[in-house]
Length: 119
Image (cartoon, rainbow, N blue to C red; front, side):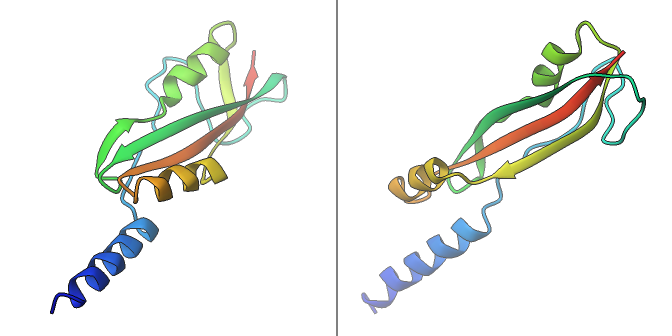
């Protein structure tokens, strides 16, 4: 019986690691238009922003979530809106290393926010 418990714990840790429930709401409350499609032809500039998210207890408790509005606000202040917005969540080597070193207690992801501002 004692030998089955560590196997069950390891199996549970692997399943939680693969199916971690870390979530992040991706919505904008900015007063200017934010679109995932092309709105206008007069693109001013493109941008790429990297942010990191951290969760504890296998993704159950958020420690630090990326703030999409905060990142977009810096880009949109002097412009009319954002278009072609794309948000990608990735696991980098550093993310995997942190997760493995903490036995999945700390779960992390890298978020890449890309888009264009227009006038």
